Image (cartoon, rainbow, N blue to C red; front, side):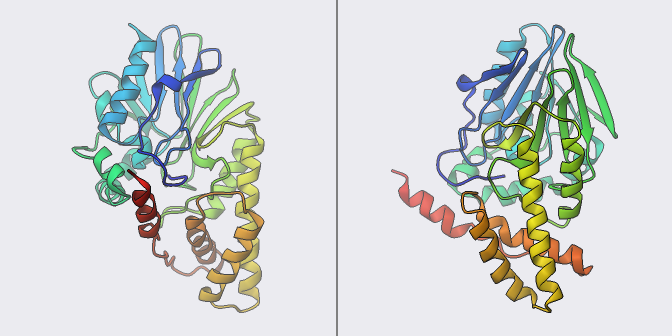
Length: 314
């Protein structure tokens, strides 16, 4: 989802760069609610990965994609249903074939309206970006895995078991060894386990399976591109959180005490990671999975962060 509140959430297509032949990335530029966006170019078709937050961002991405595609067929997929990744999709309707895994489509149908309202509360910029947005369902869905031939460029869409969201999907180019992870990996940003469908255990397992792909280039949901080590770093963090919480459960500590003490230890160990407002969600998710008790989500402490940001704006 977010890195830190700093600038209006606008995709910058002019900054698109080719990371390997036929694969472009529009970098997030460390702007909150802006994901890394991919454009994969074949001789017959072009695939866009992520549509951005709201109509204006969707139009920006679409214009860049159409500029690249020319007369080629255009396709769009998203790594998960969260608004900054998928709520610009309306701009593509009628211009591209929209394709996702079935579970992601189901989750969008079930949760999309509530997440639209939630993200509108993430400050005035987010509210403006989401004005007039209507949810757009995919034209096509698949289950398990789907391989797309763009013409000299093979792309594998693969749905996972649900770590960050129930409908997580990765996009992998086996020849180029390029992996688009969505928010399963955010470079030096704490993982986000936002609701009842997120799972630390599944997330750790998913990262292990992705490491077996041995990607040469990892395009995270947010932050700088990297190599397979990015997957390992996020997995290591989640395992550390799980071990820290488990140790305190065995000592008989209460959840409130675990919230306080584990959060302090995690922050100390990962001082250079952003998004620390999500640490309490990680702790609560791990605690529920280890104890078999219902998940009690903490309050989302956004109000102070948003206020501080908007006070800095001219």
